[in-house]
Image 1: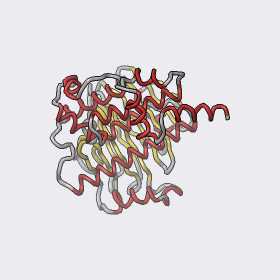
Image 2: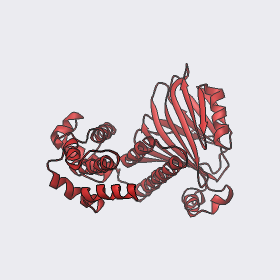
Image 3: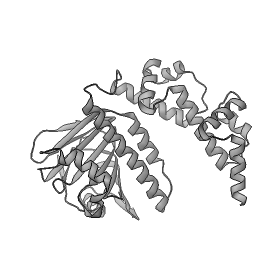
Image 4: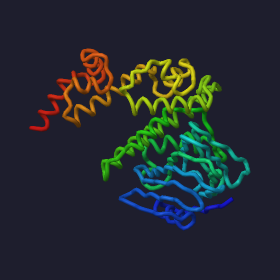
Amino acid sequence: MKTIEIKANNLQSMFHTLKNEIGGTFTTQLNEGELQIDNLLGKGFIRGIELERDTVFLEFDIKFKEDIKFSLASPKQAVVNFLYCAEGKLSHSFSNSGKIKTVGTFQTGISANLVSEEQHVYFHKDIYVNSALISLNTSHGSSAEHYINKMVSEIFIENNKTDYCYVGSYNLKIADSINQLKAVKQKGVVRTLLIQGLVNVILALEIEQHSVDIASSKNSKGSLTAFELKQVKELSDFVNNFPETNLNVTELAAKVSINPAKVQEGFKLMHGKTLNTYIRFVRVTKSEELIKNTDLNISEIVYSLGFSSRSYFSKIFKDQYKCSPIEYKQNIKLAATA
């Protein structure tokens, strides 16, 4: 197993260490960095950005060709790490303990070193990992006075006397938020603000999942297995990519080889909506993008997105955006000429 010691106190220093140990090509822009790797050690990328409130967001999209251990030094009783694994698995331990916990696909993990000097994160050989890590320093600079940092410190540091490590139950909503984060293409301050907002959403979902798990011994994944959850995620991606597809619930469930009841349970878990309601939501959301960004008329948009009628489309558009498609299009034109 290859061990990589990371004692950096900022993102740039961390990437400098990673590049020296792993190799690859490092690029940076503003407060964001990315290390692209394609060598004998592994293939993929590690991306990171420094955000407000002493928050660092890291995204791992990589497969290593041997077992890798990241040994992360951090000040005691200060840093809380929120990990979500969208695919694959990662393992974790503290330097003062040999106990290793594993975070699997669609699971959350929260850790805070109260007595240990280091935390260890393990990447397993030949297992593709897509995961997100939010690291929040609750005692650094003026951000320590921020109410969110104080709240996080109270929950995960002040209420515990020893190193804290929690592995939560399955959560598909976080996977959905990470997909939204990956879709951010803007640059500069707009990009930073969008990423900050989505990171806040992910952080909130992680803390909410922790609260639910602590309050109840029930497994929040219901009757779904990890495989079934992955199939629901695949179907959700299909709906987002092909919203115009007019397949019923049974036909869509058959695409991912699970029964319709499991599909409905998964969509309620992931999106808080039934499959049909989610399809309508995606179609209306994409119709708004087409109205705003293309020259298509309303009838063309209705047809391209697979709606059964223009009147039905107008009704559900108004339900979602509180105005009709025609009114929305007219308002955009007025704004453009103002």
